[in-house]
Image (cartoon, rainbow, N blue to C red; front, top):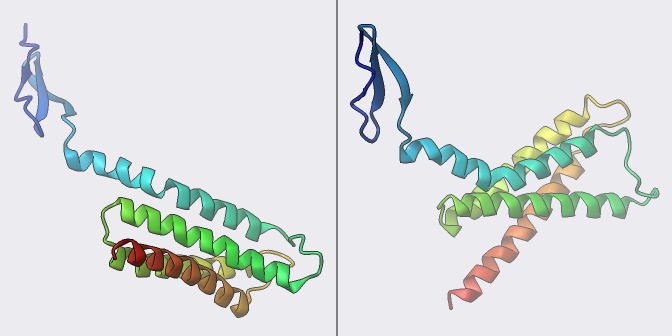
Length: 156
């Protein structure tokens, strides 16, 4: 009948099988670039999970602050400081140098803060607040500044 052996099965080439006179592609041999998405997924999973926590918290009608604004401010500050650190970690693990990873992490954390405030505009009992966004960006900025200072102290 037909030849069932693999043809052209080198790295980065399609593996073909000839069956009853037809060539069929069975699979592609994995290449380094094909595994890159998995590396990125692993690098950014902590940040994505933290973003999911932020989204969940923003979906609640209200959060227990005991009526103290300072608790709310401290909460925003801390949550976005952690997000910025996780984003920086993912960017740095993916090979970005510190001088590029820090401002990009700040921009991404702040951008997520914007989307968080927009999201809150759709949640009953919640309203977007520019002051919250300012506190979010400040928390991210302070955390990343501490990382930059620590990195600078190590290089001396």
